[in-house]
Length: 371
Ligand code: DAH
Figure 1 (cartoon, rainbow, N blue to C red):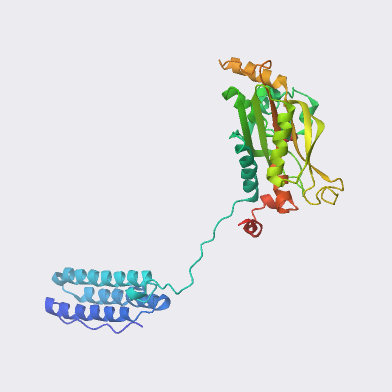
Figure 2: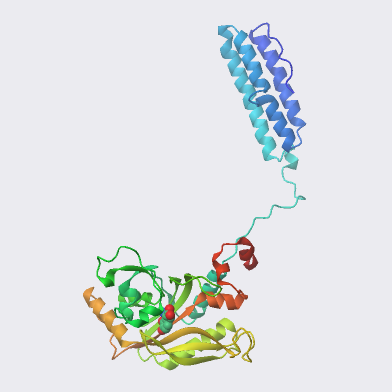
């Protein structure tokens, strides 16, 4: 589209003024006719295009033939013309290309809807569980995912080589063999070590919920993932009894799954609680009549719990003394309960998710369903 290059015979100020005023008028006239997008780009290419741009061609031709004393004056004029074109381009791009300030904002156009993120179903469920306990006066505690053998096992009354360690297929950090066992690093297999960390930091009374990510060397299938989530609970005070534990968990399950839900407690074993129990809730799918989801039993097992084993308080006291702190977890004065539940399973039940892998796939089509 480049027009022919007019020959400049004279380089005096008057002639330069005349030629450049003409060019400026041409630029301005063209800019007024722009209608957006493509026309703006064509305009840009015509004047500023690297190869065919008129500005480049004019300056190459005129600067070459100009006498030395006129080059400066020519240069100044080219710069001014270029600035004019650039500012017209900016205006047109900002105005959506019409060049008409009145049309900068066209409120009749459909908006460009920003994509709003959604909370991940696990995060949502975890916050919900934590919220139930916060409303009962619990605080939130957190701990590291890379843990020592001491916190993950020893202080929780899993002695070295105790068979209960085998129930938690542990992912250990490599090259730790030169350290004493209790200092070796591993990926925490449960959130229970944060019970110990919290009691080392704080004196009783204590009411804590501890949400977090845990790791086990489990093969992935529809119900197992090597990474999953737990919410742990710990309540320590004077005269805490098993009925407090039952009442608290029964309330929590009703708050989470609806007031019609019933709970029942079965004897179980965990090294860090005595007595220990597994808690089942009446099946939220069939109301307890029996269905495929509850394997026709009417009940679904959801969490482990128990009264804090005095051996745990003793381990805490011992460590506190080593740290120069008072051994304030006196088993003659205080008692406590603890519980731990799997968040992934709760999320899967609440949202009807059939494969745990979906929670970790990062698939937008899955995640969008929770927005
Ligand atoms: N830490 C146990 C696990 O991962 C769950 C658990 C059971 C936690 C009983 C507790 C508890 O605090 O009292 O299997």
